[in-house]
Length: 150
Length: 150
DNA sequence: ACAAAACCCTAGCAGGAAACCGGAGTATAC
DNA sequence: GTATACTCCGGTTTCCTGCTAGGGTTTTGT
Image (cartoon, rainbow over all chains, first blue to last red; front, side, top):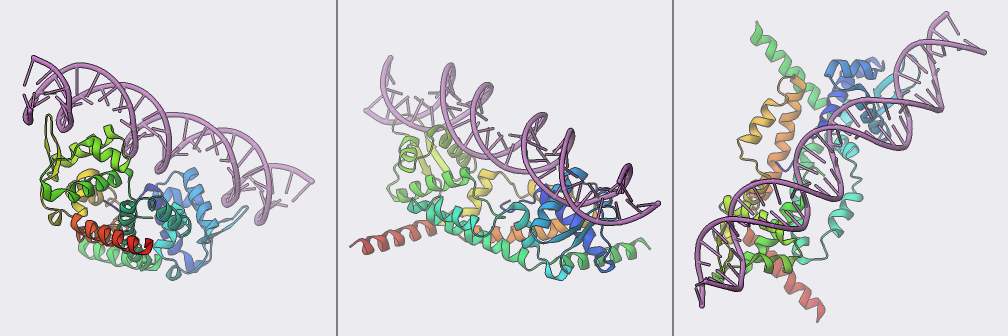
């Protein structure tokens, strides 16, 4: 299981899906609403949304009647961008880490190269999925479930 | 950095590279030799080699003049097999975990599917590399470094 | 102006996994 | 039979994740 889905990323994606669902209304969604809907600890979700805001993925409206909105349209937000924001690899930090950590020894460098290749393959998958894609897939699934129910 | 290289896997791969280098001699390599060569804590390496033995990747010779050997030729050992042995995902355990953990909610199921796709992409890379490939690449690199030195 | 609603920061804790160490036992070579 | 080296099992230390806590700041509604 090289690619692990952390609880953190899971929560963030669920929250972003909620925001994407109401994106066209331009109305902010509050932390309480999201946490209640998706069963996420609200104080924890607050931190995640703050991180996403600093990463330019959502923007916030302070004060009463405030809340969170997507910073861009769901089609313009890739899953890679989201996990990169949360897990905090700035593309520089990680390159340096992987490049310098074991390049001292020849074998270590070889191993790091292969791992980076596997990493790149996984990243490419996440790069090619947008929030909109997830919404579309959910809607399709929901439609399907409904048909089976009838 | 979806795909992380754990210290455990790194150590194991370095040790296996040492074993692969002397594979044709049929002579066992001792823990002390490997740990000294690659700067790995010997008592820890012992555990890793025990795991690899239970996974059928190396075999051991007890007693004086004992040590470890590869169970098969380096060409027949894939990197995926190695990390699967160490990280302990039996292909059953992980499938169940990913399938049941969040399929209760619709959104969670969608997310898990995408993650599994990314995971599969990374696994495929590791599946297509063998120990022999790493050895070959190391030898080529070594040759190159030597040419630059002269 | 004032209070309530909501976001904003920082610190810290509990649990568990990863990394590592030690001691007593067991098989093999000589 | 002794030295050598693996084997089993348990303990310790360190680190990270998920989560909680308590204060602060900004905005809205009246």
